[in-house]
Image (cartoon, rainbow, N blue to C red):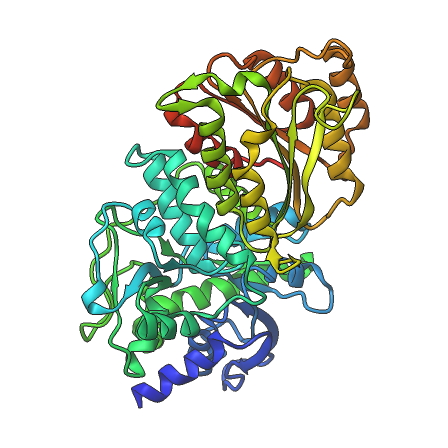
Length: 525
């Protein structure tokens, strides 16, 4: 019997929008029944259906509640559409309720802050179960996968937990960004987002770990999976399933609220807790599941400033977008100067190689070298590899290998002065020529000096032109990376600022590879 209930729950979890059930409408004491449509996240919709089917209409205030499963990420749009509007809503977490308040004009009024709960966990094979100190360490561990946090409540909760660690001083913001970058970039390579059962099955086959809710893990265990769920020592975030009134009709709003209050009360009694428990959900108090299921007592992580979570999710969204970049490297004579155990060029080649290997496969990247007159008299740049998708193959060589080969052969080009200003403007214009609105379009420039091309435009002319040509609908960010302290940090910052980009200076040669990594991570367009 229990297995059958869980299978039904899993079916709902992987389903889309579907009307799933209605409440009991018959009651000897109700002279009339009022219908209230309710939309609920698929993870709790089966429990809501079972509960309203086992609670009298009288107890619900002579209400007939119809339940539609709607993913929390799709609910704000559904509520705003008159054809799919609802009187009541149970999203998976408060985050989605706040999102609806920001993005719709529908009244979103809290009836109960929580009617159920489930923590987010890290699922692994028993032999691979770790004991990370923090969520940031868990998310950053090799082989860890996660659903898209912009749409998946469990993944969003994991990021909330990591943000809470940063807010409380247990981790650093940069560490969170480092952990999220590979997860976000991995998502860009997928044409579809694997469901929790798919990801759990992959862990069974291949090892590694995946972030899921306790409810999703318990459902897999009920079907025979031997995966286990762990939480970092810092604790975990819980999906809290608030119940809110979204009735747009002012004359019906108060009555809908009363029906919602009665439904929330029903969740708090024995019948409600039972319907939640058999579907792997905890009560609103967050008490452990019965029968030894789940992960036991949870130390709850919570964020006091929700804007920090929004910032982290925005950073993820940016990192998840494909990259279209032109990498531009200084090959002026000063790149032969000693730096560390080699030359500035050696360090730059090392940094560029690390960066080129970091780009996800769905990126499009090109490569230029520059110094004075490097492309002929009056042209300071030369194109080594045009911007193409990394998966493109030309003459039997794929784009990534072509870029790496060009990088390895830079030494033969070293010589001349630093033609920084003309090259910067030309690079921005080249990237704009075939702008990709689905990607982050940028110029990544590595240089060790200041402009010394006497025939080039002035700095002020460059900045004025960059600002004048800047198109908010087609932004091109210039990311500047200064090589050693001889780089003109002030000028590089001005160039980056004029395009909405970022600027970094690696004063210690050992910092250069890490600086390139940070430049990719901090894209802002």
